[in-house]
Image (cartoon, rainbow, N blue to C red):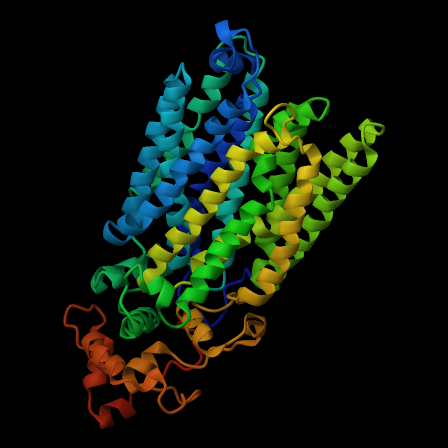
Length: 569
């Protein structure tokens, strides 16, 4: 099965991928922070003790036993407001401090926010805690997929980044279980215990990050090539003088040098740079926004209260069932993402979600109040199917694509922009949903008909993926740059085959297997000049390769070639 699903390390890849896989899976646990927080607040909003403590703003004397829409909206949405700030801050911190240290800082902010939430006895302090936790979650949501994609071998990179979404679903499920257990408690412990347990995964992640290596690509970006070689050696379990490791390191260095000949690493570059950085930025932002506009977090944030308002019996239990489906349904995506590819999964998932949501909305509109039991059944069954399609496609794959499509020089900035767009829509949906769904003065009262809106966006998503999303499976991050340079249309990207090495560009300025046309930037002397800088860097640990470049023609003739070994991870 592992071989069939492309989980088997190719025979011609040197070294071991086990260290990189274990590191990638551990870092993926950062998704627990967002998942648990989202699942916790979903159930806490419906707890009697929580409403007694925090519902006093809605009526005089605290006689009201329900949160009013404006309070429930801001309590949920303030986390997303913090995540926008955290996602934007991840770029400068990630490029200055490094991916690993910035992750530590993000987790520390999340811990501060969790402590404030546990101690809160009024809405203002609760909001401060949720905002701080949101800043941490926003930074982690950028840095975890970036860290994973920069250290993972190409043959399993997609699966490892998918594990981040899997961790989010596990966090959602864990919070639902805790909520079911603590909801009957007749004091403030019913909601303080779920809020306090957020610290457990955060502390575990902190302990692990203290000993993990920095990504080799970040170290190359900062010019610390010796440290990059050591990091790559740990991740690939190869001696630092091994030819395979030397070649991979040189390919990363050469690619970065080539990128810099096409433009700098400024914020402006992600909108005007080449090759096609504006298209790539638009693709990433579009995917992240459409992930929210599928309506998934409407279900995740408000399923307990929504099901209760829709007359569904045992809303806590039904919400727990949905979380179980969410976790289990993520596994098919993990399994087939490398063999099916990113585009096929995204389009198939969007079609499935559109069908489920439009059916829910249509049946609810047609049935009215005469078929209440049937409406409940339809709502639960097709919400569950909708979760299946999302969890196996748009949930994990969006994070994969946005972590892959950007060049190293602007990866942190571009990922910050795209992830911030996700959280911005998340905030809008989290804040506006109670007003759109609930009945009463000043509210739209859509109820289940809101699925017409989500279904329409799912239909649009199919076309967006077809026209904008390139197939990035089975090629290295460096080869994705080549694909955007040579393939003009996304629907042709599946047939792309890498035909040059950036090390060849550095050495010779062209590739024998793909001679660029006259006037192409590969002939630019700037890349050759940067190559000399790279290859003649005395601080580089890859002295064996440098010596080979400076040897005579006679010496070169006797150097054995490494022809059947895949050096690009």
